[in-house]
Length: 391
Ligand SMILES: Cc1ncc(COP(=O)(O)O)c(C=O)c1O
Image (cartoon, rainbow, N blue to C red):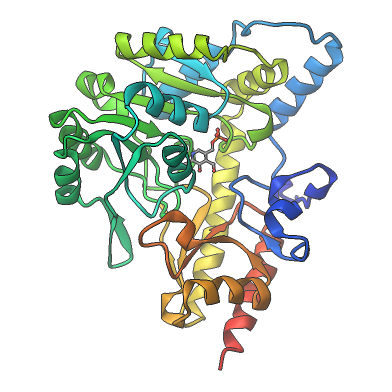
């Protein structure tokens, strides 16, 4: 029987960002589109059925949140991640970036410092710049092919009176680390000691590989839960970024109230009927589908690992989670601009340039492997041919 995930779907039938000229450039329409972080797979059948049912109803007037949504989310967090969340602590938000921006705007002042740990998701930088917050960089340490947190550097930055917040990426895009409880506790203790609020972006939490379990920062214990704003979303897990919204978990009453006041001030309160239907179905019935996707992604990782083992000059940082691979091209000796050009014009790859992720990103590229195995196989052949032609 063929695997439904092997089915090729032409994403150009809709204005998908990943294959759009806005991302690929007008001359890049034939490139292997592996930049934008979504999957090429159809959403879970349960989600498609729920959307069709909702569409069939035919009336799309104002709506409130369906009764089943919050229990579906809290049930998912408990059964999948062992995290019991009080539904009263959960706020809806349009998307994660919105939550990150609101958190910075209400819990810090212009000029205050927000710590980030590069190489990290590039939108963190844009949000901080647009909100006039100072960037405090604590680069991750890369040793023997594995990234870890520089706790000494973190303690030093956090002790700067300017430091008020940290944007934690858990699991970490793009290096694929799934932070362990011990690492999170250490980070949490440093932040609590210096009054630095943790804003934990956990959008990739459901996507982890065997032997690596996502730990919600807030689940570490009551004192950790009090010092974190957790950003959650089903966008990545169920490939529904264009028809979902996000959730923010805030245990601390005063901070949650402040967030609610800001949401109200900005009138961030409209409910989208399709988002509600998709999210409720995903969280209540999407588990088996996600297991199949994780299995498929692990196969794609194995494929990349095997292919790169036959090439010299490219190394894969072994991922613990996310469908984004962080590839180290530094041994090829290119400048960042030359690498971008080589990948684009010789390998025909449209991946995300490493330098976009900040300090430590030069010489790397981020490859999205959430595509069909056939597509990945041919992309890897293109890369091999390009590398073998380097003289
Ligand atoms: C770490 C991280 N946070 C947030 C987002 C975007 O989330 P949203 O679309 O909900 O704003 C992404 C998307 O790539 C991401 O990788």
